[in-house]
Length: 158
Image 1: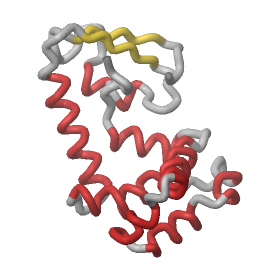
Image 2: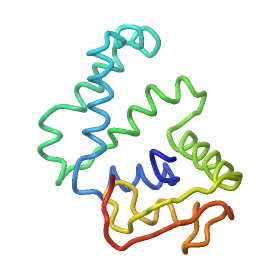
Image 3: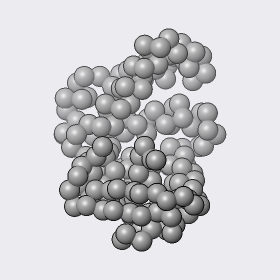
């Protein structure tokens, strides 16, 4: 079973931060920052990345920025990856991190050996077809003989 479709993280982040009218990137990043606060882990992580990182993220994730999102786009998720993820993964930039994830996903998809149904929708509002078709294929024939890809014109994101 897959929780998420195999998609290109760099293309998905670009879409979410530049093209998507709904502020998924804001909402997801705000949720991550809030979860660290609610669980008491924020202080532990701040010791590693610096308290200024959370101050900067809190400033970026203000309600005002959410309200003006349709007019002014900001790299919410990429800012998290730049200041937190890359620090722990050793990548120099979010783009380097995204590329390494894409390479990993491509290798993993090619090695799938058990029957796997991958249902994808062209109107997915989070990971539209341009973020996954080069990984799983353009048609029902995927890059692994064990994967069956079913694409629909409609269906959204689940």
